[in-house]
Image (cartoon, rainbow, N blue to C red; front, side):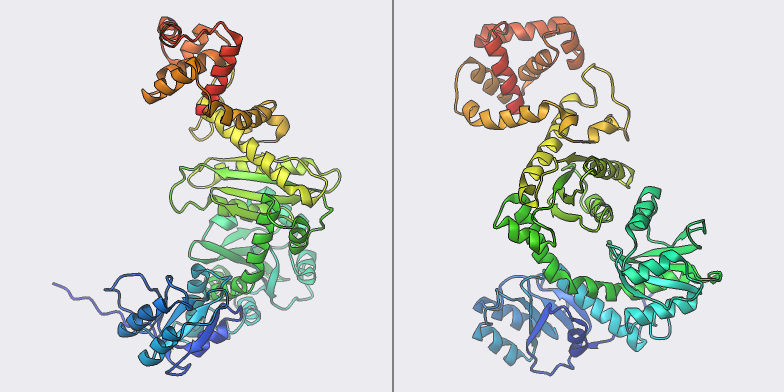
Length: 559
């Protein structure tokens, strides 16, 4: 029997160092009976169970806010289990309940609150990053890159440049330059324009997107090599991540000399060292980002004052725009990040693009210049095509809404784009990968859908768009009605829907029994028998045009 060597606990970091790292205002210290030098070893969620040890932890209490007297007991429980401090939710700026302050004072535990605009994921990431940054700076874990790599992004960029022999830029996911090393006299024009402009030029981002370089960057966890070409020198790049989330990237370009043989290894270690800094940068922007999210949601869903929302987003209310809606299959596996990658791709399309995640949908607001109206369908095509190439091949359908003359009417473009996606989804469900002529569509990852079935604008779906609008309008009339067709549909659906499916195939085939039977994979006489049963049992006359119309509507409304 072998014994395991016990793993030593992580070194403690003073609470004051965590607060100093938080320049975004996420955390607010209310009380520290033991002083701000109390040690913190880890972050923990308060509902992880009574058996979970909390020695030296900063505990996130996700239940009652600080203003609630009910939060006093979780504070005492955390103290009993050895926690250094607790973080409670700030209830819209309300003062902490006296019972909560008294519990912290009596227990000798630090009491903090989390800003209302932040969430618990942000808060946990902040504390973990502060701990990692403090430990790297003190040498406890070994600096990822020597000579001040943990001090600041600027110092880190300089250190990476020394160890790679290249010119360094550290960028966020919008390709804004957060830090860079000194630019030498041999620097290429692209680097000079990037550093001077504070961001990668649009034409360069578009070229990286077309070449597949961005897709590789967002999905890879290793260093990517780009050989020297006519546009510039040799480059290495690696994504900076916090767990599965991409925070930004580090680029190393040969600057008048060859990159060092160990440049790739230095970049790998530098990406780890940069993560806490990019988390802090992300959190610093969280307040304004969340306000922007609320403004974008208001603009696209018609909530609040549209003009104010547009200005909040940095858009002219009179600017023409369109909305692209990309919807993921609702059966996507847990943890699927397809929409996250598509969001990164969308914001790289143009700096003025705004993206909103809404459940299984991605809503993309795209300002449109005169003569560039085709960009809207182009973005929808790009998102749907990219989704097919990602690991997991989760189906995504994208609808391109119409260009509206002002941002104040973005809601109408969003609604139409969502309807187009609905049409694409319903067509796929009805056809099962078979087109209107009964021929199989071109194989697409085993899903039997032609490429064009993944994205469309209004012209691409034709009259189906108006049909969906009509169906939505008549649904209340159908649901409140009665008669032979209602009796047939309700009774048959309760029994499994065989007759309704047969009627749907018959009507879709314009009354061609042989064609409808082939789609149902039954003998034509079997279908004829079912149609007779509809007439004899329910009194439904399929020769009557009004009855056929009502059955068609009923079938579409009931799915």
